Amino acid sequence: HAINTAHHTPPAMIPPSVGVRAPRPLLLTGLLASLYALNGRSSALTLKMSGSSAGPPAAATAPKVIDSHLHVWASSSEAAKSYPYAEGQDPPPSLIDRASTSELLKIMDDAGVDGALIVQPINHKYDHSYVTDAVRAHPDRLKGMLLHDPALPPERAVSRLEELTLDGYVGVRFNPYLWPEGAKMSEEGGCGLAVYKRCGELKMPVGVMCFKGLELHYDDIVRLIESSPDTALILDHLGFTGLDERGDAAFEQLLSLAKYPNVVVKVSALFRVAGPGSDPYPHNGVRTRRFVPLLEAFGADRLMFGTDFPYVLEQEGSYGGATGTVSSWATTESERASLMGGTAERLFGPWGSVGKSS
Image 1 (cartoon, rainbow, N blue to C red):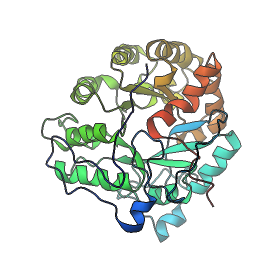
Image 2 (cartoon, rainbow, N blue to C red):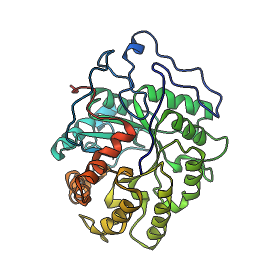
Image 3 (cartoon, helix red, strand yellow):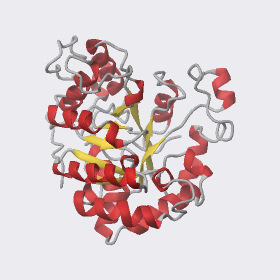
């Protein structure tokens, strides 16, 4: 089931894109070039701030627990001072002050979670400054997944991807509901396809959020997958395949994607798949009807745990319960190591290798 994430990206340079007229290559010079290092991650474009020498390989350690899907946003006071919310995208009042970087780190510590992938929240839309500052402040704990802007022309969209890659982002989120009505992510000549193919060259996974149902985007997703077999495509939240008749049909589509070796599924936001009241915590229905068949079809090395913080805080079990539930579903230590962190580290690179944050 493994995805080949080998790369040969030369240091201090992002290779020119294929299929889109390449912007001027992004070269790092002077001090920045000396700080550039591959850092072992599949996308090969992290800036290490720990010196020019990579040093000896780290000793083997216990498997890490990595939350592959969560969000942070500025608290109300932070938003007023430095990080305003996007117009019309204020966080829900019950969570507005529970999703800051500092709140997240406390929750992670309490649950024994070593690292996390922050998915750029809609609350800040295309202003990535809050997530960027969070990752810079805690590089051993946090990585970022940028939000693609489908309003950009292809060349500018690819340039923006490269800029944020150099800022340390390790993945891209496609939200199909940000595209104009009727437009497709895979549209020929569109910015989505250009970015998706560029991500294959950079070894940066693309995550897709099918909030209104996988079946609405299935054909579009297949076209993306087949357009760039080198791009890892991640489906958020078990593909949003709810535990009802419609969800069951969509789940068959999700299982059919297992034939593509570059497809990975997040075992995240269990409460969204369970639905209100129909499969209460700890979501045994999600385990038997979704997780077990996915484990059989994809294997643990193509599944990865996530919580959907901060929204999970309002669910029974909260953050720690969601973490423990998914961990308990693994039947072997090898499965657990992949599911709870190994898959995420294979796709996005290792956590904890930069040194302790302040």
